[in-house]
Image 1: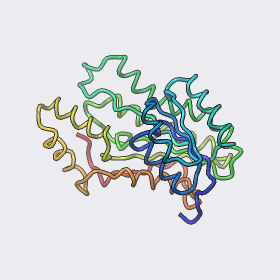
Image 2: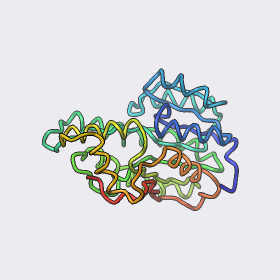
Image 3: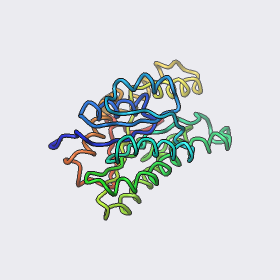
Image 4: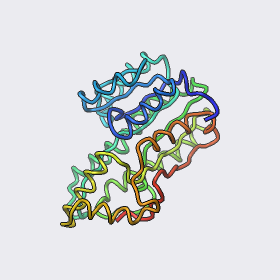
Length: 258
């Protein structure tokens, strides 16, 4: 980055653990003021000390009233907004399509897609007043390739790419950049739970499942959370000002999701 990120005002949905927390902490360490939301109150309390000058808010990012309350509080606390990171997401079910109920499908779409719409609609008026405005949407490598037995998740992450590219065109005249980060197999608790679910479905060990998954990754390893966080910092920095409508694959060279 060729310009410091000090004084940036940042909001991160689902920022109390995993990728969201890594991104929030990276911004805070760079000097930004960060406000996060999450559905896990104990995780929010644990995250707060690592976000000096920032704040936390208990909210379900797929709930319109909860998002409205978070933005009202965070925008007042921060005095404006420069960066929105749409990180809220769930893995959804791991099952054959005929075994996935409508409720599980709808929940995956609500958390992974509707949450981003709800946050963007509240963020844009504040971002228009910023000289360094950016929106960073978390998608997945499942947003560019098929993912058998994870169809709700893949469909939602492809939707995030469409949202990102459309918003980049719509908001370009306001100087707001909009990009997506597509993590691969991240070294996180969610990733481990997905591997466990797939192993159970296949009736093999978790280690055997992981070994099989990593055979389709060029670097034969998971992606550290820090690598995803550093990509977000780049996109919010002056070095990233000419990137918009783009999908950044932080995936260690993944070739297939099977």
